[in-house]
Image (cartoon, rainbow, N blue to C red; front, side, top):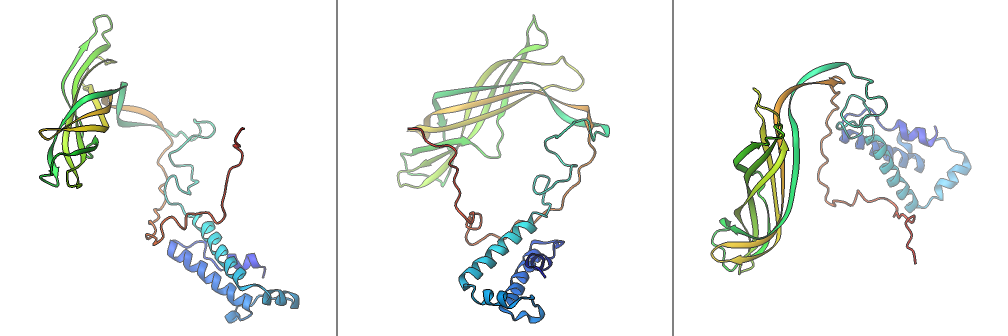
Length: 304
């Protein structure tokens, strides 16, 4: 039996779990060790006298390196056969992703879906100075003042709120309107107190905006104004009582939206691949992700 045939036949390529795959790999290593030593345990590799002499002269370190490399290559080859999600090792065409070839090929029906249609949208970006952040909800409580500002970012899981919304249609262009509103952005402030303890507190940033957008005429299905507010700051000073005055960047995204029913062409239902469980956390994270040999790209050479 040839060596590559011996390796492949020792692995169950149809195994349905990572555990059984690696079990087959290590079984392969054990059988190869026995065969190369001439012991076999019932497994023999037919060798000529010259081949036997070569095996006997094989350096032990090289043999270990060879077996470890073999195990790595077999594990990579085998794991590539698994379909773990739409985007990982999945060649089935019935999945979301880029369209290759004629996009009409595969369309089988028109389907009715409920979705949020965006009629118009814009983004406002600005850098504001002198923004006052009043602090509350200290964690830990009762920090020792004065406080040193570290950062201020959007509070996770708390959406901005919109108030004072006014849609004023333009007389000359009735499908357009001056959309004015006030958005309040919840912010988490990170600081260091006088004892060097890191803490957080809650605050808000309030911004008033007025923009011109395309707004459809009234219908039974309502049109809404969706606002996303983002605030970020790394520059600030402590101001008594319990406030920071900061310089920050503000991003406001405004959308004119409506929940509607639309007909869209469909390629049918997707084929859901089986999930693959996440591996157990390694004691040496990152080590097994390193390549065997160092790599470098010398195509981009410096000019002198």
